[in-house]
Image (cartoon, rainbow, N blue to C red; front, side, top):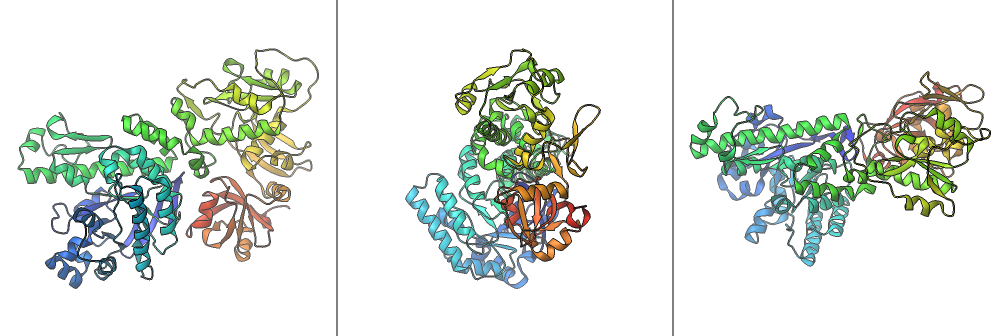
Length: 632
């Protein structure tokens, strides 16, 4: 897969098939080869990029089978784009068995020209007992091994019922095979019962244990109500028969739910039915015609939500969109809470900062991955500097606008930890301008932070709320110097601030007092401080960091051939990466080194450390400055 844009685990990516490129995230509408009331050609204007159809139906229907073997699947369907085929797993579950085995089903899919073939996996439901679900995982894996020598794109489904450990095991097993595409199966009953919180467990435990270089497909996840949640957790593709099924029951799909035709009073303007029918005319249509027309509406709703999600990814605002949608239905809010319980995992894949502000809504927001990241750092900050601590709340401190009087009369005259209240937790005052502290838009409903947590860390030193007192005496420390060091510690790891910013550095500030550039004693630029409150390193700054880190960290190791080009300022491509530090945060500055560990360049990692290892196409690191461009 080639990444175009990303937002945490969500991504817009290109996936190549024999009949064209699929750009994710997207939906593959289910096409019944026997009945095509709406053809793929009619769906193209809505955003169709591929379809899915059932190979078992074709295989067991003599007329369809003969045509498919003679003319090919694409001629049979009348569509020249990517086609995925399902294997008949659901039919096997319903009827107990089918008349064909796994290898026969896969070979047939390949013979008729399917772009993505699917093995005959073993279907499990939320009610499947654990022992049976475990057997299904093993049998599904063994069936993948039966066709592991086949060419082409074969989908290896992840099963395991509602058991997180079995989902992880199934994902790991499938990841060890040659499967290039991974559907998450056995989830339709959860979707039908609105059990989205269990679905969150299944998706995250499957996704994190699969290769990031392969598409993840949520089998049967065809209603737009949950799309944003699934994409946020790393799902790339969905398939949908819901547009037809709901239409047959006179139900219209909307991005936030489903409504009965008999109960609506007006068609939305985005609907393809708006202006073509009045509600009375639509209701008076004969049943078959009415179902087809409602299916057109439903398809529009599905693809409209996909377009909205993609726009949110481009804006780096998908997390906000998910938080908003969570408040539209109790089952979604429950799922959102469950999702935030995985913040420690999600945080590993979140960017260093985002284009959009951080929105604080309510107590649910205190579980956000960015809160998790900065809270972990605050614990490290306090543990590494155990001393008296002042907490600044309310009017004592306005994050983002340094209180000059406070800095002059308090901070610089006493040696203490200074914490400010933010998003229901505490953060070092030195991070006042660093994302997301300054960039927060708050509802004002933050809970009171837990003082006892700070006391436990710094004991036996005292923690107190600052009450506005002034301190006499001389200045004993420099706020701006400490500030750039704490930012560096947060961005590059504890202790790095003092390594790259020595006591004699020169700190340039703007007319408004914001720090801009940091130079060495002899005038060499080390780093600039961006508007998001993080540093962009020069090659010299990278050299200081590279020389100081023991053991080496923040490194992207590239081939010696690539290093020569990167030293001239050219970007790093995934295919030339030999190794990476897995703790690298997406959009953070990294050190590009050759196979011998020599620093070639400094640049911004486009993805996380794990993703740097796994992707194969596209730009991995955008170089700021190479060795050959610097004065060093």
